[in-house]
Length: 115
Length: 113
Image 1 (cartoon, helix red, strand yellow):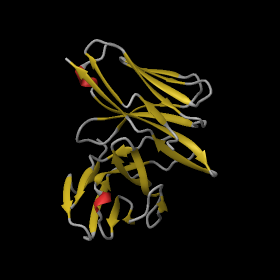
Image 2: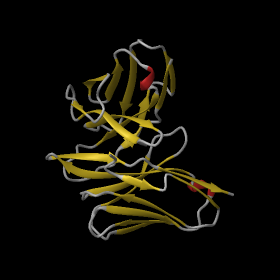
Image 3: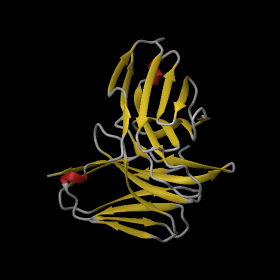
Image 4: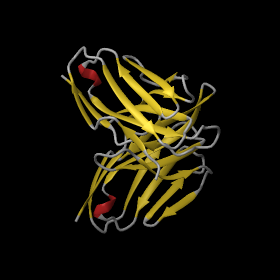
C-alpha cells in the first residue's frame, strides 16, 4: 500500500520560531510537493522538487524554504513563523510528470497553528 | 483570480438525492483530475479525464470533461452519507511553457441521512 507520511498531524508554534515539517514517501517517486490548504482557496503550491537536491518555487514560496537531501524525504521550513502561516500543510508525491497527468499521493496533512 | 472555479462551494442534501458539481475555467486544460478529501486526511484521486467529451463512471459517480476541455462536472446519483467530503478538481495547464497543476477551491458536500 502506497504511503506518504508527515511528521506531525498537529503543531502549535510561536511567532518567530523556526518550524520544520517533514514528509516521507515509500513509492520511489521522483516528484514531491508541498501545498497549503486554506478555506475558500483550495490547495496552493508552495514548492516542489523533481529530484534530489532540486527545488522549484510554486505559487506562494515567500516565507518558506525546502530541502530534499534524499529521494524519499522532502522538508518544508518556515524560517520565522508568522500568524498568517497558520494553515493545513499537505505533502504529496508523484511519478515524474511529462505530458501524462500522474496521480498525486497525499499525506494526511499537518495542521499548523502559529500564535 | 482563480484559474479554476468550482461551484457550488457548499452543498448539503438529503440521502438519495442527485447532485452535480462543476469545475470551470476560461483556459484549456490538458487534463483534469477529481479528488475527494475526507476530514483529517489528504485528497485521494477519483478520476483523470484527458479527452474532450470524455465520460467516466465510478459506481454512482459520473465525471464528464467538456468538449472544449475548459470545464468538467461530477454527478452523483442517489447520494449516500459516505459521499460526504471535500471534492476538488485539479486542472493541468500549460502556463508560460511549463505544465502546472491548479486546484479549484473545492466543494464541501454533506449528505444528511
